[in-house]
Image 1 (cartoon, helix red, strand yellow):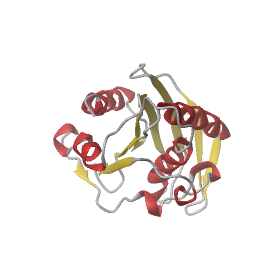
Image 2 (cartoon, one colour):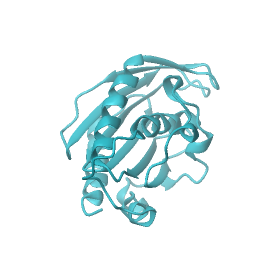
Image 3 (tube, one colour):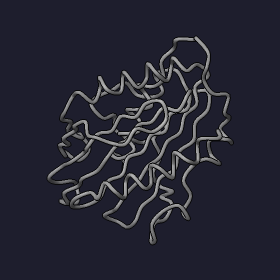
Image 4 (cartoon, one colour):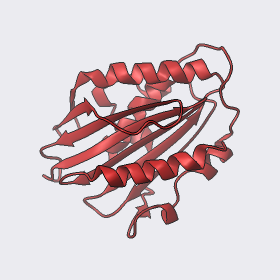
Length: 200
């Protein structure tokens, strides 16, 4: 679903800033791909969603498209679905050579999510975006609750977007469901994803 990938595009756009002070990551695309969640890490019934690609996504909160900003030094992404109407999970990993780039990126993410409400022009769906509590992992953790009272399929959606910085590696995950999200499931998936990037 393009609106879901759009949340990750927003995060990527904001993370990709230049500062050049070292202390980041030298991970390659292949390293990050190996660290992505796999089907065996997901609850029963989930599959990889081959149709989801960030390049097709609408930009949440009207942010700058990714192709207009500096690219990360390495990146990998994967999307999962539990069915036609969800649940959905999209994960993106990026590595930045300079840790300050990642630190500044987290700050910009916080600023951008301050929009609070965003309407997807493709579906005329209005999302409410609010910061929410989440266990601290890595060097920095920021989380947001995403909700809407209707989508293009006339289904209410609820979810969490979690951003974690571990040195120069950024983990971005959006997990949404129809109805009400069980945040304990989000946390379990995030902890698994985080454990897999510790050695990157």
